[in-house]
Amino acid sequence: MFRIEMLPAAHGDCLWIEYGSGSAIHRLLIDGGPAHTYPALRERILHLPAAERRFDLLVITHVDADHIEGVIRLLLDAEALQCRFDRIWFNGREQLNAVPDPAGQPLGALQGEMLGVLIADYEARTGESVWNRDFARGPAAVDRNQPTLPVVALPGDCRLTLLSPDHAALLTLKDRWTQELRKARISSGDTAALRARLAASRSLRPLGDVLGAEEDEEETAAMADRFELPADDDSDLGAQLEDALGSGSGEPGADAPFGGDRSPANGSSIAFVLEYPAARPQARVLLAGDAWPAVLEASLAQWLDAPDQVLTLNAFKLPHHGSVANLSEALLARLRCSHYLVSTSGALFRHPHARAIDLLLLQHKGAGRPQLHFNYLTRCTEPWSRSDDQSARGYRAHHPKGVSLEI
Image (cartoon, rainbow, N blue to C red; front, side, top):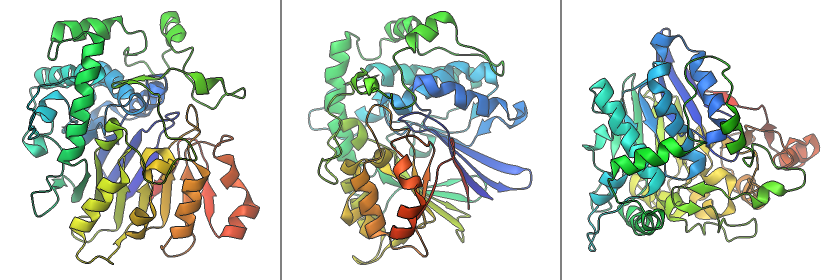
């Protein structure tokens, strides 16, 4: 059994993966969405018996708010939820400082450092070393000076091959991170100041272990300017989304060049191919975070033996919610896939971009019709729900909220 769920996370990502057989079920969680959709993740956890609330791996792909905020709230709630993590992958201050850097400057940024404090708290409370344990606490990253890509074996015969980020992308993030920390007037590693900022935040709060618990009035007020769905009057387009690297300005629009993303945060995204069972994979899935397509292309070229060889996949979670800036013809040319996963409601940035989906359908090389999977049906994803367009262009689309795909 292999199943992937795209939980409802507004414009962000929150991926819940299960694999195994019988009572031996293993779980991965990739990102937690923005703060205001955390209740959906929490409810999903609470529907598990307490003894089963263990994840073999928690991945925080990068430091943007629509991926990291829900994880901050989850770690604040972890003890109350009796939630355990055997591994946590996250490239924070300690890992970025470990990347060889000619400038050699230490760094830190606000939410990234907050998360680092919470992971350290989790380790101290449980007595377990989980932070990037598969990388000796160093960066979860591709070293281009090495002949092969990093490969990690998970319990239950699952294999992960890391494709992103590489060291160059992490150094780009490091330069930006230092600037943002200075703006926040926080010294790198100042745990007391970080805890004070976290305690003062009205949106980054735990909810406890009561199924269906409500937010308090103060938190409701803090979430008033957060949008899960595209607003009918487009008022969500003016929302000031604060993330770990400052405001969310500069997002590439629908007319941006293919593959042109230059966001340092996106470039630092952890992306990997999951294979299960490892020996003879029946499921092979590319989980791309918000990665830069050029980094993915370089890793696929390093992995595959010949320039014309393609990687056969069951599913591909599109990077950056189907943005044109994170897809390219060169990337899609290296993939043969059946199912394409798009995690977004379209709020704030109007993802997915129609040109990105058009390119995907044009470049599709998999067996049978391409299958598009959306975790929301909104005006931003509705165009692909039309049966006449599906028939004319030879694809199928699925739109349940919080979609689940079993392979």
